Amino acid sequence: MDLPHDDYTLILRTGDPEQIFLLRGDLTRETTDALVNAANSDLLPGGGVCGAIHRAGGPAIAEECRRLRAQRGPVATGQAVATTGGQLPAKHVIHAVGPVWEGGDHRESELLASCYREAMRVADELKLHSIAFPAISTGIFGYPVEQAAWVAIPTAIETLQSAKHLVLVKFVLFDKPTLDTFAKAAMAQRRPASGRPYEVLIGTN
Ligand code: APR
Image (cartoon, rainbow, N blue to C red; front, side):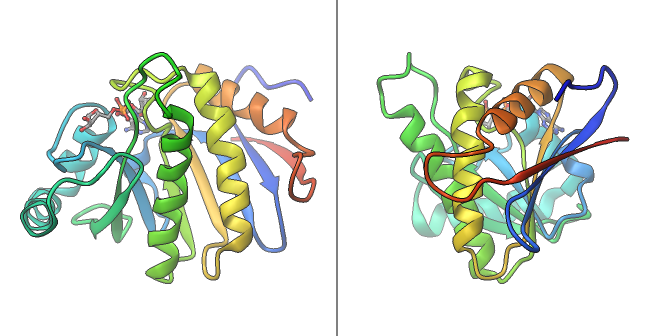
């Protein structure tokens, strides 16, 4: 399947009704039940998608982050915690701490997989139906996009299969090269070594 030159949405029908969408966009505008912040361990408002989420969601998110940080200490890499979505369309923000890329032999892929799994586990515990992710760790934390895609997609598919409430996972990718890289990984893994094969559909926006 060739990828369109213009924007598109790639849909992976991993179950019935479970689906994964890949699209280009601004995560802060997503109307899913939760969106995932590429956070830091101290839950401080940072740059990148984290800064955008705090700006768009208003001070209620940072206030809850401060409370959580004081109660429970820093969030370990690979873990996730939920706060309000403040003024965002999404009711909840799930703050997941991705690994900093250190060359690939410092458990980066394991920790990145854990981020996606833990964020989805937190959402499922809150009985949410839909969640939207950015490409965690691929900005300031320096994780190569293609390698991140090969972790993110199979982890989301596998975790969605065992979720009780979640039926929709969106990857909302900020630029077209990142969308294309994630889309290619999703198409190449159509028949994963473990798990069911899935149907891939493409829609133009
Ligand atoms: N919507 C979707 N994706 C976005 C947006 C947005 N509004 N803004 C940025 N991105 C993309 C980036 O292009 C990148 O592909 O999110 C991806 C993750 O990049 P970062 O936000 O830099 O996150 P990360 O690499 O995980 O670094 C996390 O940065 O902001 C700090 O507090 C954060 O310390 C933490 C670190």
